Amino acid sequence: MVFDSPRMLELLNAYENEPDFMVPEIVFLARTDKLEAERAYLEELFVNAPAIKHKDWLGRLLSEDHEQFRSVWFEIMLYGWLLKIGSTEVEPIIEGNYPDYSVELNGKRVIVEARAILETAPEREEMRFEAGIFWALKHIEKAYVVEVTGSRSSSKLPDWIDFQNRVALWLDTRPDDVFEYNDGLNVIVLKTSQIQPQNNNKTVSAFISPGMGRRITSEPIKRPLREKAHQHSKLRKAGYAYVIALYLESWFLSAEEVAKAWLGEEVWTVDFEKKEVVETSSDQSGIHFAGSEIRHTTVSGTLVFRSEWTESEKSSYLRAWYVQNPFAKVSLDSTLFPVDARYVVTDKSAKGFRMAWMKS
Image (cartoon, rainbow, N blue to C red; front, side):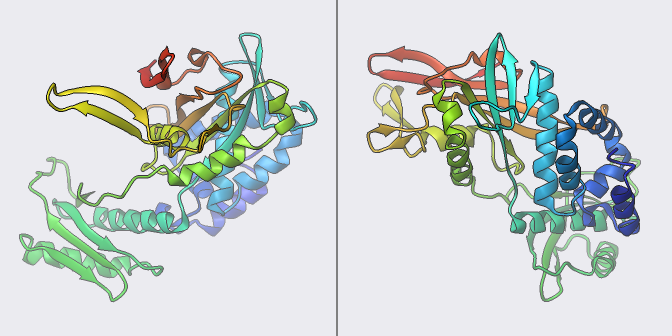
């Protein structure tokens, strides 16, 4: 249905001679042995899904466009994840609305709206650039471990063969010196590492310096959450439990940033003489707060997902966390969801409440 379709075969032929890091994700998914079981699982989910969704899902999944592919990949995998925890409907008609999913949990109908927060085009270009570095180094037959200590990329990728030749010459002649590749558009800085290669290592191994980090912020998450929180007003006002399922593609975003997007940064009041925390509170920079008004009370909580891959299973899977809405009009038992951890209310008093991460 999916991976033997005419469009899929057309894509495989078109990219037959391209390395993995240069092909659309659907092509990599279709041809790599690493994802053999994932292909079978997606085919199974297509069979189980209502026929009305087949055309939409297939068209977007077999797209060369990253956003189309990854967003529908998440929708399909989320469908599989929900099927494992309860009876699931795709786009049910409720109160004249068509939410993405509904799932029965302990006799309660829970509405689930999906949204993927994807890496930006510059972030994807940077990842392709880094993938090119690793691909090129891995094909140099010299037993060195190399650290990438700096880089600057452009819209035009380097000539990777030229890069390989220059790195090979450096390793043959002056491996103790810092190496800089500069083609006028791209810069890559390398040094040999003190880490010793394994005995069977016959090609260059590489890793990125831990110092090459990025600033992490919850800002990219706020707008998608607001948009989902405002959807299906009739349905939410009717008193259904309403959960936003959020997929985070970037490894620089996490469930912690989702909690901060809703509730803001945590502020600590410390007694320095006693060396103890007196009180913790929110700085109210999250989207729940608008002055003295509390917003988005019809959202019960947020499921946060990230994609991970297991070699033994030959498949990616959705790893999940849950963030409770402490102001929700319709609350949910967070233990109903098979998640790694839950950010939930742990203590309530007349003054307010305290939230914390609880491992499942």
